[in-house]
Image 1 (tube, one colour):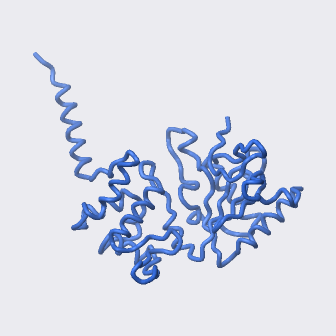
Image 2 (cartoon, one colour):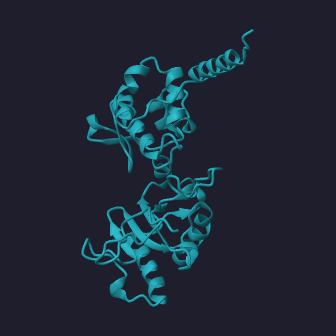
Length: 279
């Protein structure tokens, strides 16, 4: 059974049923290779944003071993949206797709192949480059600063996904008196939203997390909270807003290493008590 989940820009007319589906992790690379072939662009793995192609879970469940869509970091300095649309359209025409069926038109026509919206171009992409496995939505995410976008749209972990990571980054920025823009970097509202840092290798980690923080410390919610617990004197105050947002989402802050060790000790103590035989 094919699960029709994932990107939802493309829908049948007039039924408005999804035309794209989740893509299994093993199909991600060959599908991106197909995209590279028809566009002439290159998307290295570091340009697969979010959890694209990264989900691998030993339990084998499709949901945990697939991506909802393909999010690709697209350098606007190398190709414009118009140029990309022209490349995709040329391939579609070579496959016999009539020109009036290529583009989506707002909500009036959603069964096309290309959707132009904001900083993104969406493409109804044949999985593995054929029509045998269905279609996945590819999101070409344009930016003039691809290095920054790689870090801003990094995926999270199974417990704390990319959306929660972005929420924590924004909360920390506010706590430091700045704003976190997913497009431009750290902004200073007292200077007309001037960009004060857009480099994950040096500026951003220490501003948000504190002295000694590295790019790697910003990778996940867990790594950021662990660094702050250890190094931030105003830890409780700084993460209070994020903790509140987590509670609204039905989650708690990641456990500290000390908490995990204590839980393990309690677990072992319980096992030992249960193993005592009454005489």
